[in-house]
Amino acid sequence: MRLNAYRALASESRVRILHLLQDRGAPVGVDDVAAGVGLHVNTVREHLDHLVATGFVGRESEVRATRGRPRILYRALPRSAGASMDARAREHLLRLLLAGYGREVGSPEELAEESGRQWADDLAAEGAEAGAARRDDTVGPPEWAQMAALEQHFEELGFDPEADLDADQVHLHRCPVKDLACARTEVVCSVHLGLAQGVLAHVDGPLEAERLEPFVGPDHCVLHLARRAARPAAAVPAT
Image 1 (cartoon, one colour):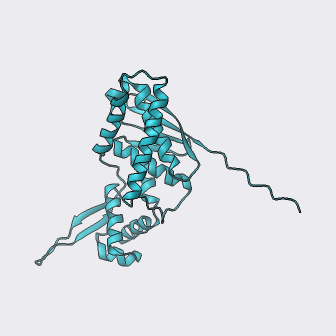
Image 2: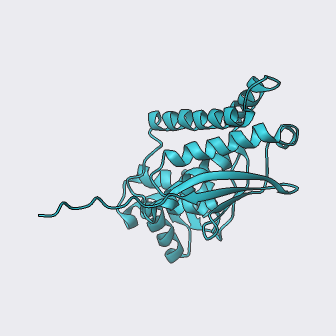
Image 3: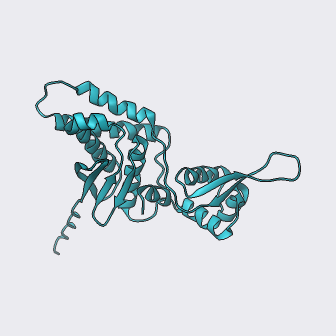
């Protein structure tokens, strides 16, 4: 399953909407979808926009033989990937890189990782202020929510991420700052590792970002994850 599938399908409401569209097998209006899943039209419209953006649902205008504005209809699609890069996030990354470029520091990797973690903190704060961090209908194991958060940020950066939960890895198939990464691998990859560490720290779950293996292929890096050991249960005092 692609990473962006984890993010889209981590919402019970979106799963219900997608199932309804698949069952109908024909384009459906937003009012009919809302009635079918028992949600407010505005809420359904937001979920549909998300499903359209992640390639699960297609959107088209109704063909009408009478006058009047045509309705927007939605239909389930075969899974397709696709997400645009967030230019503001890219600029933020470049500022982090250039701010430390050429400076004499004790450990460039540690400084870069810390910058990445701070970046994740800033993004989490922005998301909370915008009301974007809504997880009230999240379903599935906790690592799904963590993978969803990783997917969101790495897709916004312009990577082509793919998760392998069996191996606890995320494959990054495209680097939007490849030229800088080739010139300053230790800095660029450490920023990305720190970002992954910070993103996972903001979502409850067992996964942690352990290391980033650069350029296992021409345009392929691997983020290696680790799972925290479960805390031992507190001993019950003898009576």
